[in-house]
Amino acid sequence: MDSILRRCRNCGRYTMRKDKCPYCGGDLEIPHPPKFSPEDKYGRYRLLMKIMSGKIKLDKSVISAVLGLTSTDSKAQ
Ligand SMILES: [Zn+2]
Image (cartoon, rainbow, N blue to C red; front, side, top):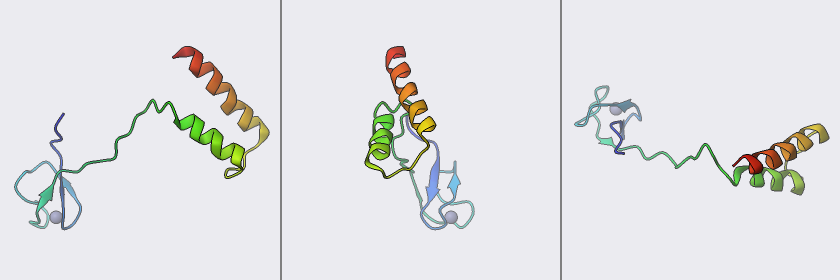
C-alpha cells in the first residue's frame, strides 16, 4: 500500500499534498516509518532476555506475569 502522506523535508510536518509543503513550501518526501508488527513474536523474548540479563529490574510478580503471558500466548497462536 502506497502512503498518501508526505512529509516536509524542511519543517518536518505531514501533509497530504504531493507537490510542496503547504506550511513552508519545502520539498516533500514519502515518510517511511520503521516496520512495526503489533504481533511481534520476538518482542517478549527480547524483553525476557533483558529481564534475565538484569538490564531491567522488575518485581518478581511482574516477571512471573510476563512469563505467564508468554506461555499462554504461545498456546493461543
Ligand atoms: Zn514545510
